Amino acid sequence: MGLSIEHEAPLEVIERFPELVVGILRDQFGAELPKDVRVRSVDPTATLTVARELRCDSALVMEPAGGGPPVCAVLVESQRAVDPQKWYQWPRYAAELHAQHQCPTFLLVFAVGEQAASVAEWVRKGIPWLRPGGRFLPMVLEPTDVHVAPTLEAAQADVPGAILATILHAQDPDDPDDPNGINRAVHTLQAVQQSLGNDALMWIYNLIRAMVGDRQLTEIERFIMRQIQREYFPRTPFEREHFERGLREGKAKGEAEGEAKGEAKGEAKGEAKGTVNALCAVFQARGVAVPPALRQRWLENPNLAQIERLLVLAATSASPQDVLAAVA
Image 1 (tube, rainbow, N blue to C red):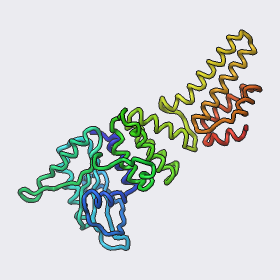
Image 2: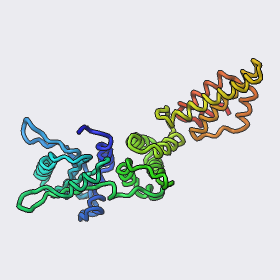
Image 3: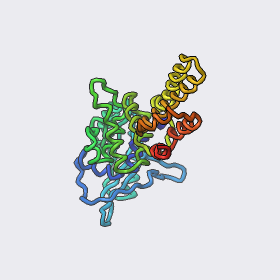
Image 4: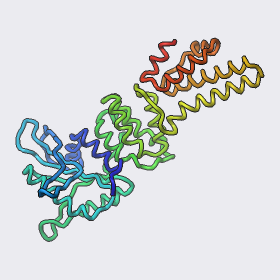
């Protein structure tokens, strides 16, 4: 099975926030780890012979913060379908990591995607290992094992955990009877922006945009359009709606008003009014309110070429506030 965003997303989160694995081992599986432990990524490739190598998804080593031998090593795998070959590959990965770092070694499997529940059930059966009746038992984490932050405050209290939970629940179906359900990813996005900045915000946005349902995606894109302070280009239907619908409908309305008057002057004023309406709609979509006095000034003394240039700048500028301030 080829790689997918569902497979890669939790691994990206762990790569950026490897300390999450410490909390997972403690909270989900009762592991007794030192209070101060440092986590580092290690090469997930295990070379067994010159001609053959095995590669797991990710590998981590936990060490005392003050130095000393490793506390444990953890293999991290993302699994979105039952794969019997893993029964033979995972123990080999673990044995190689165990020998290399000479410490207790664990396997953590993220069950992801539409088959997460069946994958988790399969992993929990364990692999016959070492002695009759013995089992190689991976740890498995599925979406039902973690909870998405219900409020912004909860997401702010544990931003990495909120990101991971949002990723694991990104494919949950939209529930029309739960009006707060569509906001679960937005809470995480807000916490990410406030704590980690816009680069991290765009990173998580690009991870989840291909996985969430339509209603969640609409709310997410609405938040991105209002908050992000960088060059922004419409890509999805919702994004294009705010940039294109205002121009299309505004111009059509203005031209219709002009044509109704049957005068060339009326048509010009109608077109200008439509363009002004479109410009105001774009500013509003990006979270910037146009003062009524400025809108009235544009309508009374229209410079169509200037307004059209402003329309482009309002849609593409890194800071639409600065565009408006320059002409206010």
